[in-house]
Image (cartoon, rainbow, N blue to C red; front, side, top):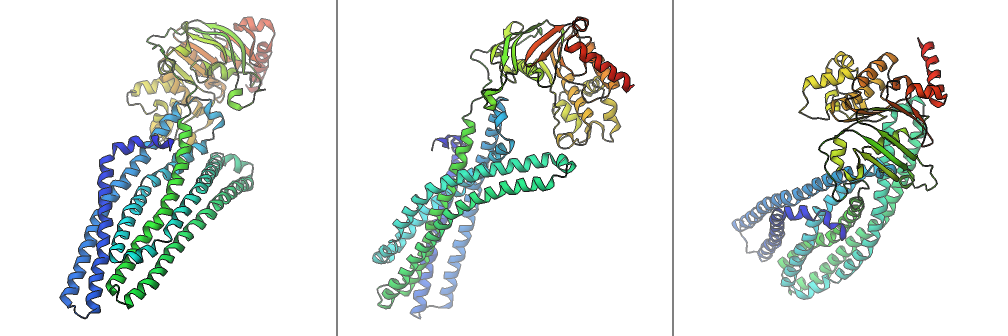
Length: 585
């Protein structure tokens, strides 16, 4: 199994615990085999009327002693083997999460969050079960099964041979059904991923669902996906539902053989009554290994299907990563150059006829200068910004930073030198302080207060009873849109970097607050290279240069006064917004 490499390091790391656990498990198996021998002695003595109370008590104490030893060894093997499977689960989940974080933004265009959640929870749980209980069941099937057969043969070889007649049918059945199980487990896990995504999406959008009275539609969608999940599970149940009864049937067939042939041999004194009872006890012990053969097949096939699904993600290489010989960025002047840049989302959206998001972009931003970007929705403004820190890589041309192609700079250094505020601010479920500092313990309170003042959010934060320790809830649900946006801006301002990229930073605030924020941004002009997108054009009047994007192309560029003179998109939109602001006042 190729995907076994995913858990092999954790198994090697815990090999001593695994060895100790297996030794204790084998010890438990052998200790269990002595209990039927004690029962045999007791039954034979009782049948011959030559037993005393003391002898019976002795036999009982033997069994109690064995039970205590079995209990101790069983505790140890459960701690060792089950604990190891939990460590495998932890390590694999951390490894999967770490790998997913290395994947490029384009990967998440087509992959659903619910699918990734299912991999990180349900799939890894099945791998844990296969590693832990699968190892236990396999060991029991081999050790306990073999030893039980040996003890049975010691009692009577001929009777043992008859009892083992159904065994080849069990092996054949396990092989036949295991292939079918693997296919069905893959389908079930895929359906579970879809179900997880539907539930996640509906809960995330619960306010919109309630606002439009679409609860019934949401329930209907979930019902449809849930029905598909159940149908795939029922398809699996048809396989396992045939497999396990088959195991039980052959186990009981062996018992019937023992009762008939063993009973006759007891009557004819070929074996003693004690041997007969012991033989049935050993058959009872053998029943579990026979069942374990089916169970371990079930666990391993489910675990293999899940491990294959995880391996598919682990084999996905990030599209954006450090190039061989990538250079460190020790100092950043902040000069940004776009050279005939083109970009399309077609490779990520699987649509070859998709219109290019950017096409033929040529522009140079000198260090310390401010570039404003305007344009209608969908013109490529946010895409333009995402190419600078390599959230996406250009499809054509190149983006240079201080004369160096950004693809030749170490990604960590590149992004560390850029303060980035996206168009849609995202807040984590934590405190306001944690969302601004990203949990960094090196941020001084004075720095935090300064950043929030510059973002015009300090007064709003201190108005909360808990101030910076206020819990914002999932996605910042307790905050208004403008507050979330200003917290995201404070996060960007807190990072002292040579380049600042702001995607529509005042779209959700009132004009007075917007003016205060723009005043802050303007005060940094000349000290940082600033690239700012804004639909409120008055916010860009101070910029050293302004470009207008339309259908991914630059249709006009210049300063505020030059663009006003051109009477193009910028001038018309600016005058229209001036009229709107006059009416607003």
